[in-house]
Length: 188
Image (cartoon, rainbow, N blue to C red; front, side, top):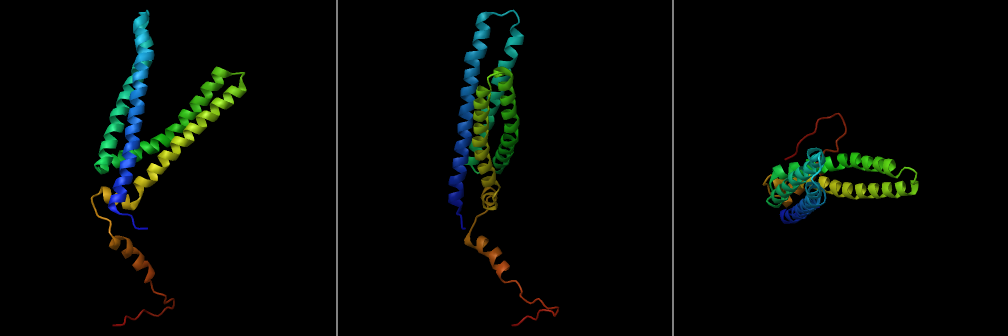
């Protein structure tokens, strides 16, 4: 299958758009953390304010870091930067592996919080598994795309032409069919 440089650049732009969408999601999450967790704690004037602010401030800092990271990955993928491709591969792997722990933690928290309501626990667990499968499938598609040889060549700045596609196949098709022990004689 011959894939042109332009098609790979368009597909990389779609992956970049996905990373921009993740950055926007974490920006919204950070804003929600600030509005619904930090501002009420500051407004109440609680006596143990540092202990109440530590978890939401940590979450806000993490959201800010992920917004910057996903924005940088998206810009780098749009500009065909190989370093951004490698970080996107790492983030996709982290998303797949880390999602297992996130899903497990969500289900255990539901069991702890919803204890005797096993139908609620089952629905909550099914939702967590569904979200994990959806995000893992997207991460897996991105991982497979960014690891393809043609995509690597374009990110390295090399051109994919018909010659690059045909040459390896031609060598594979012209193998010797001489299965005897005699040496192969070349003809002119």
